[in-house]
Amino acid sequence: MSKNRTVFLVDDDTDDQDFFKSALQTIDNSAFLLSAFNGEHALEMINGGNVDPDIVFLDLNMPRMNGAELLVELRRMESFDPIPIILYSTSSERSAIIECLQLGANDYLVKPNKFETLIVEIRTVMDKYLK
Image (cartoon, rainbow, N blue to C red; front, side):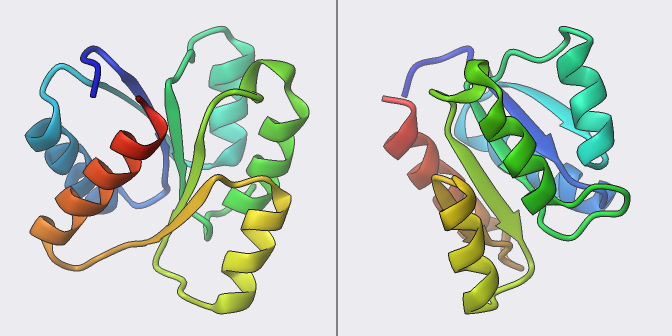
């Protein structure tokens, strides 16, 4: 995996953000993590020119604008066409997973409870999409 990657995480839960950040630092301490706390905040950051990610992780269940709604908006943006977008949620409902993949998500990860599992899942996704 190349170094100095920018990862954009959109998640309303600060504990989950910290958990993700710790796992990412374990995988690649040169990666830069940008975070937004909901879809609206993410769009404000993107429209402000403050976001140029190599990969995006979206929580599904967030207030104001959820991950599926943000996914649709991002896939409408030409600049996000080549960027892998991964849904990252506690929801393991098959219908939610299928819907997100149909809306343009590249992949879907169910948030694990174990730190070691999160490391493996993030590393696997980043190796797959950031060659």
